[in-house]
Image 1 (tube, rainbow, N blue to C red):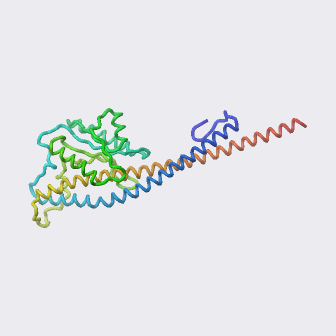
Image 2: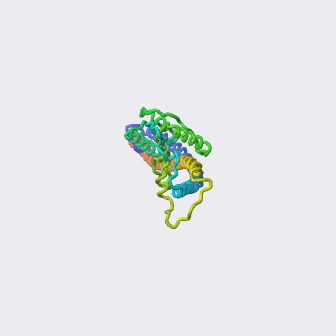
Image 3: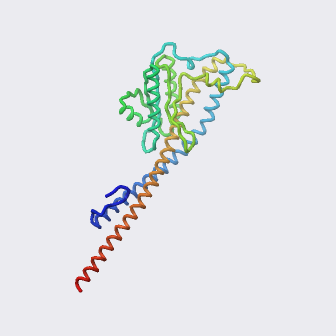
Length: 305
């Protein structure tokens, strides 16, 4: 038997036909399974995309608000924006992968980006502390002989309250000097046809970048802060961090679902193509068998004359 649906005639006609028939049934079953998985992934993608679109404007607006307050507040600083006073020589890397496979190159792209982040941390003289979301990341880092400090599970519909618990712990550990920086590696959803692996610096918050995106001072209105700018930043910065982490996890789930949808559609199409090829092989084998039987009948009749 050859690959690609073709067969050599080293089997007898009946054996060959039975073998092709078995493969047709198997391919048909696989096609039904992949089609069902495609429909499930499509439904999950639609739901997760609506959640991502609903939360994105809030994230963007709170970032703009932090940028405005930082630009107008003058020389006001916050511990979440400053490196720890005593360097811990550690960097926390949170990797957001998937619990399940069959989603194309999703996990491959994310985990390769995570390895680059780990390498960059080591080159900067920091010990990488890896925490993961998703079972696939655990298996990968076990194979790479990299210890996983903690695993988090948020499911297909992550709740903000669950992500907030993780964000609060990261803030507390950072302020206590547990690590010098925190980065999140995830798949950012750009469009249905484009998903990009990204490394987001969660801590320390980059206020320089925020101020660069703020409105310019020329012609701008004067702000009077009540409460003062320090208290406002103390409230807004942790909220910004929590919302950014939540959006990263939602983006990762949207990207996973759309990539699984595309992978299952491709598998369904391939199964359909293979089924057509097997049907042609089956018809040829039947025709060859019929021709052989007719030849034998004619030969036998001629021998009796």
